Amino acid sequence: MDITPFIRRRRRVLNEIGSEGVAVLFAAPEQRRSNDTEFSFRQDSYFHYLTGFGEPQSVLLLDGATQKSILFCRDKDELGEIWNGFRYGPEAACEVFGFDEAYSNSEWLHHLSQAMLNKKSLYALWGLYPERDREVMGKWHAVQQSAGRRIQANTYAPDNLADLAAVLDPMRLIKDEYETALLKKAGEISALAHIRAMQKTRAGISELQIEAEILHEFMRHGARFPSYNSIIAGGKNACCLHYVDNKDILRDGDLLLIDAGAEYGLYAGDITRTFPVNGKFNAAQKEVYEIVLAANEAAIAAVKPNADWGDIHLIALKILVQGLIDCKLLRGTVDGNIESQAYQRFYMHGLGHWVGLDVHDVGKRWHNGKPLLLQPGMCSTVEPGLYIAAADDIPEAFRNIGIRIEDNVLVTADGCENYTVAAPKSVADIEAVMRG
Ligand code: GLY
Ligand code: MN
Ligand code: MN
Image (cartoon, rainbow, N blue to C red; front, side):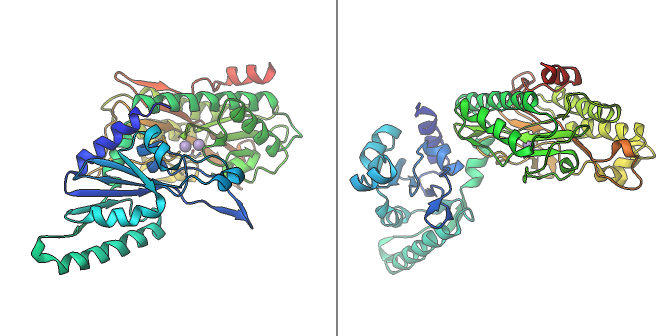
């Protein structure tokens, strides 16, 4: 593993918190699944971003005064490793991951209390892990009290509990080259899985079988886990935005909406494709599909540096609303329906979100009440959709059509790069893949 990006990021944080700051952050907690069985461990995204170190029960301390990065991790343990696998131990972790110092994780609170002395600001990801907050706050109170008793000696403790996310989120928003390579690969693997799903789908099999095909393709390419629970939604299930039961039988004449993405090197892919179970769109399905596709393509074409995300949202929204009017699902004008928000009956989510270490990645989308202008290195989904639940006032042919088309795009110097372009999305391409 190339550790240079992690070292560079730690240096940048140390520089930002300055000589009067100290920062502490934690590995993700392990999660019990049942009795003595645990969920697979997934490192905390912030902790990974600054360390690349994948072990649980670890702590990172960044001391602005000494400009040192200090890791606390599990000790080597011969018997523990026979049962549960390799662990680095402080000495090897320090060497391999390029920390300035590393110690047993039993020592972190003691080092934190020392590092807090004569600092103005204590940075942490407050609220992320409340139990850790309590430990840090307990030590902070203790240090404040003992520093108070030593006022003569000019000893003081931080009086500013600062938000480390305010330092890290803007960094994570602009992806470096190391990250874009992983995001690209996550997008490519995710696209292969959607192609496989199109090839394997037929009436009479279950949504769960298609989920198995998706996971098979992810794993085959080195992505052990999906970046979120896969949505495999046939027919009316597509009108439930977060349908993850994946238990129904796929039916001839229905559409299948699949929202599934691979996590590769901890970076997320997030693709949605919608296609007919029997391989051929009917007239009403095609009509709605072409509207959503036009919105997806127009929005992606507008992604470039200094573009205003609010404008891109509006480009897609106008296409969707005009389409709904053309289908006679809405009455009146485009502007009137946008003003009244009547379209929200059929389109009730945003156009996209940042994607990175988290599938819904950190970073502001708005700044001072205005949408952020896109900058190279930002990576976003573009995912318009239309969801027409069955109701008495909906013509039969449109009932239970749920369509979303979602891609992952990186803002580049002169436009954008679509990492998920390999997943077919034109009617002709989808029908060809399903025939083939
Ligand atoms: N898969 C979650 C989303 O599209 O936001
Ligand atoms: Mn998605
Ligand atoms: Mn998404």
